Image 1 (spheres, one colour):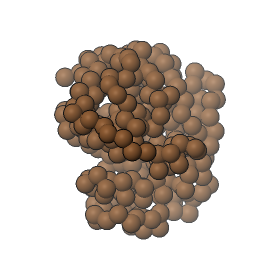
Image 2 (image 1 turned 180 degrees about the vertical axis):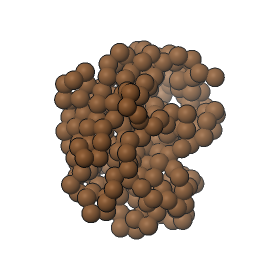
Image 3 (image 1 turned 90 degrees about the vertical axis):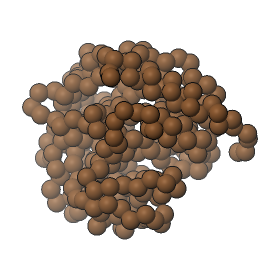
Image 4 (image 1 turned 135 degrees about the vertical axis):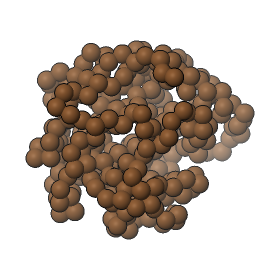
Length: 269
C-alpha cells in the first residue's frame, strides 16, 4: 500500500497519547488519522518515546494474526516497556493501574532477560540469539492504552501507542529453560475463572524467534538491546481483558505463579 502520510501529524498523535497516559484519562476517538503501515506507527511510537519521562527497560512483542500479517508484512509488533512500570511479583497480588474508559488486559508471558548487549545486525535467527540470553523468567504483561479501541483498530494503531503496553510483572526464573522451553505451559484465571491455557509453543516460532524478530526490527529503527533489558516474548494463553477491581492469576505450574489486581489509574508526574 502506498499513500502520502503527513508526518507533521506524528507529534500531535504522540503527544495526545502521552498526555492521556500521564493524566490517567481515556482517549476517544483515535487522536488523528490512523497510521496505515507499521513504519508509520513506529514513527509515532518513537515520537512518544522521545518525550516520555522514563527510560526503556525492555520491549514487548504482540502477535499479528492472519490475514493481517500479510497485509502489514509482519507477524509481530513491538512496543517499549518503561522502568517505572516493571514490578517484581510477591506473595501479595501486584497492583497495576488501569485507565477508566481505556483498554487493559493481562497476558501470561515468558520473559527473556538479556545477559549481553546485542551486536547491531539485521539477520538474527532463533538459534543466533541464544548466547545473548541471561535468564528466562515467568511474567505477566499488562496491556493497556487510554484508547479503548486499540485492539480493534488494526496492528498499526496498536503499535502507535507503545504497542498497547502498560507494564510488566516479573515472576520467577525458569531453571533449565534450554531443555524445557517446548514443554512450558501456563494458565490464566480472572476472578477465579480460568480464561486461557497455553504455553511457549503457542507463541508463533517460540520465544527465541520473538527475540530474533525484535532485534531485526530495532536494527531497522536504529535502536539496539542492552544487557539487563527485558523482552516480553508474546501472549502464551491469549490476551485477557481485565477491568478495575478484578484480579488475575497466571499459573506457570512448577515455575510458580503471579497474582495481580487492576486498580484505577491516577495522574503521574
